[in-house]
Amino acid sequence: MPIIQVYMMEGRSDEQKTKLIEALTSATVEQVGAPRESVRVLISEMPKTHWGIGGKTAKELGR
Image (cartoon, rainbow, N blue to C red; front, side):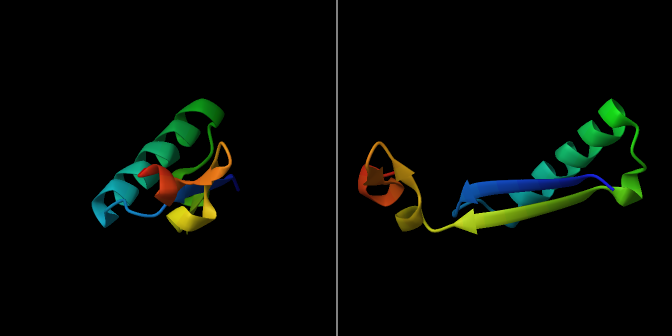
C-alpha cells in the first residue's frame, strides 16, 4: 500500500487538495503499478507561522 505524505502551507482550497490527491494517486498507479484503491494520500497543512524560510516565517514573508 503506497502512502504519500504531503506537507504544505495552509490556504489552498478543498478543490485544489482534491485535484492534488487525484493527480498523486494517478501518478502512483501509473508509475509503480499499485492498485488505485491501495493508494493513500495524507495532506498535512501547516500554519504560515510554523513554516520557516531563510530564518523568517512564511507569514512574515507574505507567502
